[in-house]
Every structure is written in C-alpha cells, then in structure tokens.
Length: 463
Ligand code: UDP
Image (cartoon, rainbow, N blue to C red; front, side, top):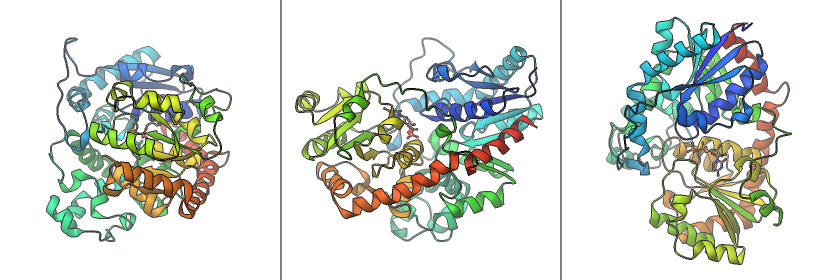
C-alpha cells in the first residue's frame, strides 16, 4: 500500500525537467513505499530517459497550453538571444494552474490516494497557489544556479543601490556589490539583466518568472537547491538562516547511482576521445537553449580551427547548417575536430582526453565540469549564466571568461592557450580538482547531499 503520494511538477523547458527528474528518481529510490507522480507536458515527459522509471514513479502529462493542434508558434525576437520558445512558455503559464489541477486530479485517481505534498520547480511558482487550495505543503526546488536566485530575492535593494537601466549599470562600473554578502565578489554587470531592467524589455517572460518566483520563495520556509554545502559558504549561511528547512542536495544527477549503466553515445564521442592523449581536446557545448548569432558562430568555428587544440563540439543539427561552408568536412578530414548533435556530456567531461570546456555556463554544465575536473572557457548568454561565469572565473578560479563575453577568433585561441598551455591553466586544473573532491564527497554515503536527501525524503513523504 502507498504510504504517501508526492506530486512533482516540472518546468517543461530547457534542461529543467530532466534535472528535476534526477531528483525525483533519487527521492523515490529512498522511499519505495511512497508514490511519486511526475507532472510535465507530453513533449517534456517524452524527452526524459524513461528507462530510469522506477515502479513508484508515474509520469502524468499536463497541457502545454496550446489549444489548437494547428497552432504555430511565431518567431518572437526576444532580447538576450533567446529564440521563439518564449511564446511557448507564455502559453504554458497562461493555462498552468488549470492544467495542474487537472493533472493532480488524474494522478490521485490513478493512485487511489490523495497527494500529501507538491514538490515543484521554482519556475512554476504558481504551484504554490494550487498547493494552498489543496491545503498541502509546497516544496520549491531551484534546479539552476542558487546565487542568481539570491540576486532576484534582493532585487529591490539592488535597484535602490545600483539604480535602474543601462546608464546606472555603466556608471556603477566594476565596483563590487559588497552591500550584499553573497554577491560581494560580483559586479553590477554580473547580476541578472531583469533586476535592473537593463538590456531590454522589462516584461520579458523570464524576468517575470524570476521576479514572481523569488517573491513567492521569500514567503516559504522550505527550499531545495541543486548545490553542495560548502561550495558557496556565505550562501549556505543565508539560506540556512532564512529557511527553517534548507536542503542543498546537489548535484541532482549524481544522486542516482548509474555505475553499471553505459552512457548512450549515438555518435561514438567516447571512442573518438579514446584515440587522443590526456588533456588535448576542448569540449564545446552551449547547452539546450542558448542561441548564438551566425556571425558569432562563424567566429567560434574560426577560433577552433586556428587553435592547435583538438575539439569535440555538441551542436544541434539545425545550427550545424549555419557553419561556414566546408568547415565540417575539413574538420572531419583532418581529424582536428568532431561535430555532433548530442554527446553524453557527463561522461565526456570525465574523459581524460578532455582538458577544457567551452560553455555557456548553465548551472548543470558548471557542476558537471567540476565533477569532470575540467577548467571552463565561459561565454555566458542570459539567465544565471553570467553570474555563474563570474563565480567560475573570479571566485572559484577554474576558468576564464572570454573578452566582451563573446566569441572572436583571437579570443578563442587566446583562451585555449591560457587553459591548455600555461601555468595559470595548470592552477585552474588544481582548483577544479579541489572542488571535484568536495562535490563527489557530498554525494557519497554519509556525505552532506546524501544526508540532506534523506532529510528531504522524510520531509516530503512525512515519515
Ligand atoms: N547536455 C548533454 N549533451 C549535449 C548537450 C547538453 O548531455 O550534447 C546536457 C548537459 O549535460 C547538461 C544539460 O544538457 O546537463 C544542459 O544544462 P545546463 O544547465 O548546462 O544548460 P541549459 O541547457 O539549461 O541552458
């Protein structure tokens, strides 16, 4: 008999749902007599690796808000290089509460058991209203970088001190934000664009999500973070003081033991890496949604070709078509680089041949880079990426940020020289190995993330 029925609600865009699914698997394996209903849109559920489905998890589809099957999403030019999925997010959020109520009802009927607690991605903060209606606990989970959320939680103060708009940011210059303890190594240009309404439209849906969810979080007494106790000690103290139930249980993807599962590697990236010497290959990936302008893509390709470092590049097929003509053939013929539409990234980063990672600094990529012990070359775009890139280069010191935060041929060659060939690069490798030790120890038996996960399971399942 099911002891407790827990609903988990995903934000069905970018890497959010797969990250939350990792946490769900980890919770469900510690609570075999409880049931976990994982709610997301059909397409997001289909993208999950359901070979990992345990018998006490069921996938429950909810509407994506697109009412007509013929609906074609228009291509809205959004700021910060975010392409047309913005409209999909807006449609999803518009009908979200009704869709969620229906999904929860269906889950309760299917399990013959009332939901006792709703865990949700913080990005679907509206879940809290539905949990209130049902008089059950809401447990918000931040899947991405926590410091970015901390900044949003202090948006009013930041606006008051730094000011609002491009000019205010410029005149604040490179001064550190020492009025906020957790951001005392960051500058005004590192904080999320939406806070100061600079760089474009203040009604942009991402800004709205961050703003609303940060406010909602301030009312909560519980938070789950995809981070590791000790990685950002000042941030730990803040969250510990603010939330009576603070669960840093990251990295979520390491909570599930997958030692016996061979990685899915449809393009044979790992056997290609096997042919190369230690730390001679740069891995390049800009995550699942960052959009790179074709002229910058060409500059990156030129830099990769001009540098004498080998590379493995994960690049979606439709974007591969935008590469300079002849580039892919040349790289294949010379063996200089391999370009594929998907890699088993966590395994790639652990491969000894990989000596550097060119990344947009999405939070999962940062954590995976630490676990792989690989220094980063950072090209952040939006959301938490800018703040993460600053932490990587300035606080943790295991990477460099490209000049002007964008790809140029010379910039790529220069960054590779630093990371692969200099003493500075060697020091970065040492730094990232120190962090790797801390992070991997946290998920081992009795490690902090493991212990916090046990506490979290007790909290959500009620035993
Ligand atoms: N990823 C992967 N293979 C690829 C590209 C990406 O496995 O070829 C995974 C990567 O390991 C990471 C996620 O996609 O877990 C990207 O998440 P991140 O938070 O870094 O960026 P986002 O896509 O959310 O911007």
